[in-house]
Length: 623
Image 1 (cartoon, rainbow, N blue to C red):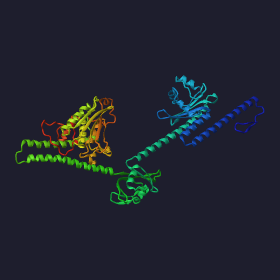
Image 2 (cartoon, rainbow, N blue to C red; image 1 turned 90 degrees about the vertical axis):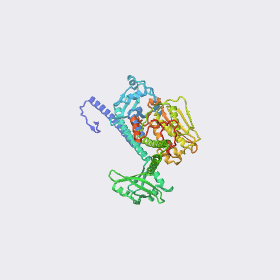
Image 3 (cartoon, rainbow, N blue to C red; image 1 turned 120 degrees about the vertical axis):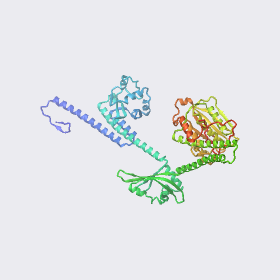
């Protein structure tokens, strides 16, 4: 009688051969041992899997996978590498070695080639002698930073998720210098599968967190206020920076956002004023409807108010129930300010056009309506007045056209190699000949490289800056023009000793209407510096202003790329340059009814002051 493999006793026939019975007994004992080993292996594998699945930390999960794989296969050392979408190693964990020893793996000579080979194995790889295998492939010798036997047993398996490689597990130096077995390989493949799931989950979680962070950043930095209400309680859940700013305009220092909501009233487009409790948000919540672009004035009891454009959108759950309400608030102050500036600008342009028209009308009426013959010299004087004022009108229309082209990216410029000194000299002569003062100092560094410039346009920029400096400084003070090499650009500056610019006004100088905003800047349409900025940027340069403060003068500087820089293609980021054709120039003249600019007067002719039209808007160009 002997125990059977299934655990009960079997009776053997008395005539059963003894040798056969001995072999059966031996085979039975081997099966029992194998079953015991298998049960132990499965128990340890189950225990390891359970322990790994209970851990939520990504690195802890991978470390558990690696430690368990090394323990169950009897390996002395283990490494798991994570690969990015390009197949490059982005991180690794080790087991059985110190952090210093693990770090030295990546510093070994030839390791990138070893990793390139091992990181591309399509399936499990089991090698009795890793060092010999490396040499047989013609790869550089591998000198591990840890103690190993001359013939290092090696086992590796790719970590695959949905057929895509996300990492590799490596095991080396099986205990007692044995070779890894088929069972070890199957065990490692199983743990590689667990690692793949952990890596995929971690990456998905990381992507979700990144997307959430990006969305939160987008909402927080949005120029539109965003407020979220709880649908069930009506309580305030969250609000972004712009909503906080709008609230700070209305709330008292000791008021919380919740307290502010209790005292707000909302004036709708039909004139009706309601509180938050009376506002139909609750109806929107119940009906799941939306509120689109309604202009609402938000008030507090002391009279302060903010005009906003309000949108409200319910957020629904998977079951179709309203969970929360998202309200966006757009402060209309900036829009109202822009509309005010536009209205002032139109009024100013009308005034600037009316002045020359009055002079033209008066001169023409005097000549035509005189009852007596007028002296020819006096007639010529009236004609010069008419011509000057027509030029003023033409300059204003041209500036308006330039601004429109700058805004649409079609400003015509034709850059070609030019000497900075010649550009400055040409602008100086045009400035003086048009009535500007002559106390200019020129400081040009010798040996400046040629710049890429549309001569007429850059002279226009310099003319505007010179006129601006003259307008804001006394007649006796000097205006200094300088040019210097700055790396691959040439910087040209116009400095005055005038009234200076407050620091808070510097960022807005080159915006349209900026002179309308600042009374202390004197007259002007506010287009001159905006045009300068558009022209300079169309050349691939930049322009800025500096001032130490009121009464300390100002310095305007712009840069132009050198010819070498232009040839090497460094005009990266600059606006596209439009080439101005002869037909475009002719159409401009036909549209304004004007002659080409920059025509010199006959020698000895009398120059009459132009009407109150600001010199800063004239374009000094012979186009």
